[in-house]
Length: 255
Image 1 (cartoon, rainbow, N blue to C red):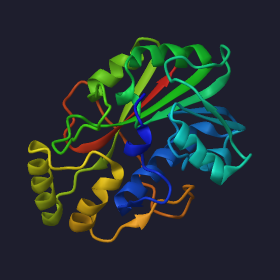
Image 2 (image 1 turned 45 degrees about the vertical axis):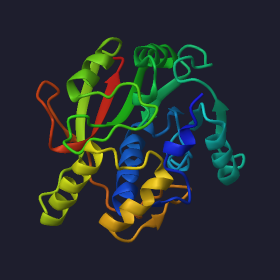
Image 3 (image 1 turned 135 degrees about the vertical axis):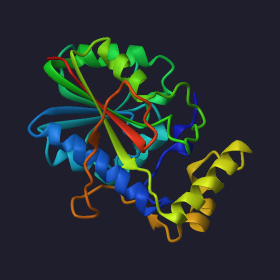
Image 4 (image 1 turned 90 degrees about the horizontal axis):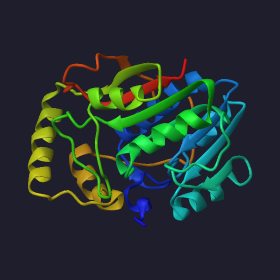
């Protein structure tokens, strides 16, 4: 089994302000769907979003396959959040157990994402909602993560969810900047990606981030309102190539 803790944004790691902003966007967006609901976050990583969602939802359960990550979450939340070690493609829950299922920045690690879609539809209630967030593979600075199996374009993500979900909406987030500094960093990053110069682990990438992005900040154990500005994802058409956004969101509704 792969050690996903090496490629996960873990509490205490030094990250860029943009990473904090992206994470906050993910969970603020999810929170809009979770008020008073029973929520499952699959592949919850080191759990920065669980506490945020717990303040809005009726109940939140976090699932991950990596034991180290679950131990990190447990140290912070204690008994506040129910945690379970499980495979995203074989979820140990009864039919119609949740109102919302969330999978953020992890679908590209699944060997059979179609199986996860089936499992999500099975455990969701009749009006259930599936939320997915993933890096946009059509972004020019896209760099695949170790252990990844398949990345999705907006069109591919749309049709993946349409296999089981009646209504599917696609959103773009983290728009590409036109600032000169950002364009220079983009060129350097593409060069580094092309010649395999970027370290594979999150820890190893800290050095490069300090050089190109400046001051880094420790990743907090919980995301909270008011930390950064919320910039809502933008509805986009799935049937055209999407180059202007770094991140894609998909919302699948069973009815």
